[in-house]
Length: 336
Image (cartoon, rainbow, N blue to C red; front, side, top):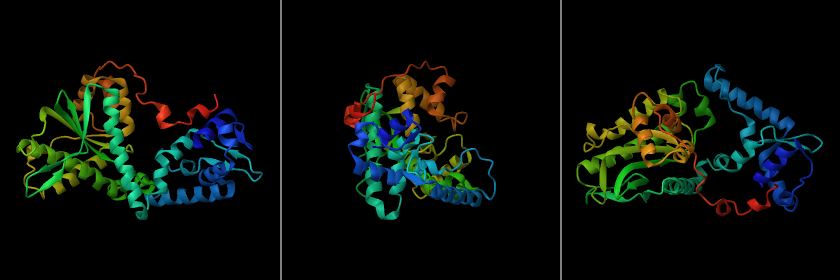
């Protein structure tokens, strides 16, 4: 429904009555969607003021940042008094209907839904990598350890010719508005920092298990890469929060004497979007090259895909690897 609305608003600025069948034939569903994604002008003004005040409080009056909260992320459609609708940025309807749904279920009472979303995120990463790089295989997490202490490996184990070359911990936790705009990011984003630190710890514990001979199911490459893949761009162009994540990861690892300094190797942070963008532009060797550079001090905070160009890896965009009819079986109904 939101996809159909997006096309409507791209073709005409104001919507009074939908022209295309995907919307006009589903009046009840359309009314529910508009109720969730739209606001009348007076309510939009009120919420916009509240968001501005929240940001002022979070930044202690410093409004110099270019990235600011907007009501259009949650309510991308505005309604006039005469009942006509307008979407100032139609593309935000797509975001609202996909990743934006997270904020409808962020409450603690939706723990089951959030766990299901996290699991789907892991499956997405597992399917995305071999879809773009068919020479690779992805395995799910598995229980490893000794009889006295069992634990789970990272969420995704990437195999190249029966050898694990990359291990990935997936973190579906999204950043909140207050965390994004807080004056003290290490405090405002503490929930996310702790989650990312756990991801780093999981990777390090796997390194330790390999070194100790506890993990032996598959051969492991000497140049094993560790990654934490996030749903949001948590650490893009950011070094301060990254340092806080690593500090917390070391604090957690200190409780486990089996994790030695040699196991605490650099870990690559990237978002799901950047992972997909990189995989779409390169092959197995190019991806490995990007990961090798991303783990260095010089390229911390870089977009993973931009490293390809930076280090001279040739890039040629590949076609989207999934069948969109399986993802959106109703796409044939969309206006041409």
